[in-house]
Structures are given as C-alpha cells and as structure tokens.
Length: 104
Image (cartoon, rainbow, N blue to C red; front, top):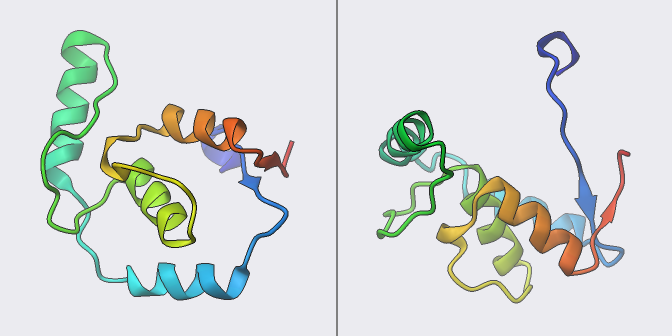
C-alpha cells in the first residue's frame, strides 16, 4: 500500500465475531468480480465525475462496496440493498453505526 501511496481506513465493531466473518468471506471465494460494474463505474466517473451505484441484479458478482455490505448483512447488521453502496457509502455507514476506526 505504501509503495503506491494509497490510504485506507479500517473500521471494526467491538462485538466483532472473527469466526463468523471468516466463514462468510470464505464462502465468497470464487465469486466473480463484477467487471460490468467496474466498466460502468470507470466510464461514468471519467465522463461525468460521479460515483456509481448499482441498479441491477448482480448475479453474485461483487465490487468492493457491495461485497463489504453483503458481509455486514450476513453478520446480522441492518443492511438493505448492499448492492447500492459505494466505498464512501460504506465508510459513512460504518461511522453512523458505531464502528471504530482502528488504524488511524
């Protein structure tokens, strides 16, 4: 991450269930990445300067924000329409739902 000069934030709830989390993410191994969504997001950002929200059924294909929110929903958190979350939406959701920043 440092060699590419990326920044990131990690949020976690105090009641984090690592065993359940690992079970959920391992069940997602082999899921297809949504290249359709990646292409749509890329061109929309380039052409219009806007983030993209999914508005179609994704057939178990994920991009970063929706995969994160799908996991949160599977952990029992109140998440509706995980496919509609951009990375900024995920960050705001974490803050609004009492997640603590653990790497800052």
